[in-house]
Length: 310
Image 1 (cartoon, rainbow, N blue to C red):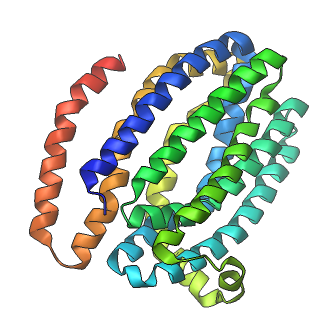
Image 2: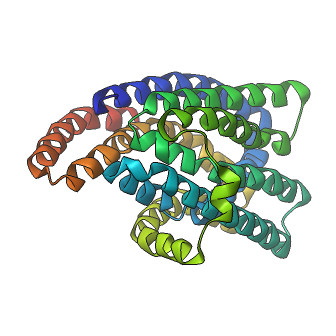
């Protein structure tokens, strides 16, 4: 089983290579789209991401915690989580498209929301698989999928530029990646929980269990929800107040800093299941020691990151 340090290393290496590719691609993309279309593109991404918060609802963090505490129940938690995600994905996709129709967005924006929203809904089905991978500290596979996601993103960006495509073509990246990730994660989780019995798991799900999971996940939902809203709501507000052109200029300037902010998320993602396991076995001293070690580490890298974002 991989250590937290190795998981952080794999995730960091994956993100560094990915960010190099994305930086090159986005510099060309902003030039190709111009301020107005860039604003439309970023608005669509922010719009569907905000709805995507409801699909997750913090359940992923709760399930990671429960599996980390008792891995013998991993398959049961996986099936329950997947069944809930299927329901939420369908409801949320209908809501995001319905609200877009109601608000009368431009046809190109509406089409992009429909495609990107489908990608977000499919991505919601990935969360149960990722929860298992994370709880078993198998984040090397998640790092590989992160890199593949960036390669697909970059490939579609340059394909869109080459074919003189629109923002609708750009957002197909989310659908392509989600489908590929579902296939790969389906095989990855079998090393930990055996072959998933998806239809059986959905059929045997009890309404009471859904209510219990949603209730237990509420604190995590608030944390994840506020974080996502904080990072995305500015695009929605600027689009409504100043229009797509100003939104495009704003996002072009902000993108570089946004790309640098990956490292704290990598560390927290790798450490969370470790802390859950240690807390479940009442190893408080080990929790304190691990936390102090990584806090010193994060303090050491904070200044270079802050300098790079200036």
